[in-house]
Length: 290
Image 1 (cartoon, rainbow, N blue to C red):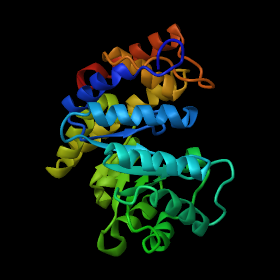
Image 2: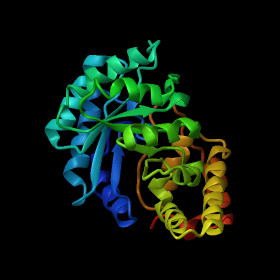
Image 3: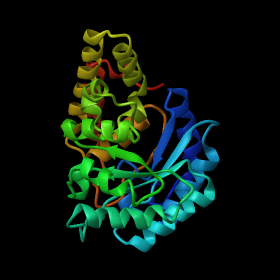
Image 4: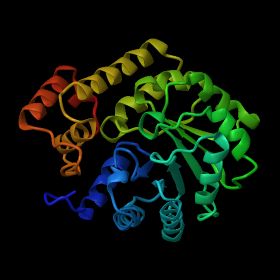
């Protein structure tokens, strides 16, 4: 965003290179951290197009196309396919919510059909959508109704459900884990990929965590997970909205994401000072992205 509250697309190229330099393999565009539900359809299309254009070679661009209105969601999905995105993903409608798993599958099928050549992911985040069905039930019903169903962005704490999804149909589905605080637990269950807000600025920490797990160095992996928990706790308790605090951290690292869009309140100078001081004390600026 720029100071006036509009889009500042000129930052995207620098942002994409920043992520790529720190070992991030893809960008999840216009998700929760991207304030998608506070953006117009036209703005979301402009952002998605710019990310596809500016992404370094090999970086996968997954475009979030969820919307309360199915026609708008379909329009966003069709546009993502047209501009050459790698995949699309959609969260459930959050005003008039699907009452059953079948209702949710029918909505997602309508979205996925608008981009039939792209992998489709469902975005499971009950904390934001208010829609909380067992995802194993979703997969069992959606598998035959959504031909391009690739998997789920699973942003929830129910690891039993996550494990069931990982093992569904012989491991057919790509389950992208979305709770940064418990990534290590997801790795134990077999997670092969993750999408999270704190990977924007702490990717090296998580890459080291994953490597420690793969090397069977569980004490080190647990230590790194605890660092991530401490970092996230500091952001959650600095007094500012999590999104505004995240943007402040990105600014500290040289990526100017600008202010948040109302109704999210901006971080105050005192909250920013408190945030930076607390992060410094835990050594964040030694293990964060560069």
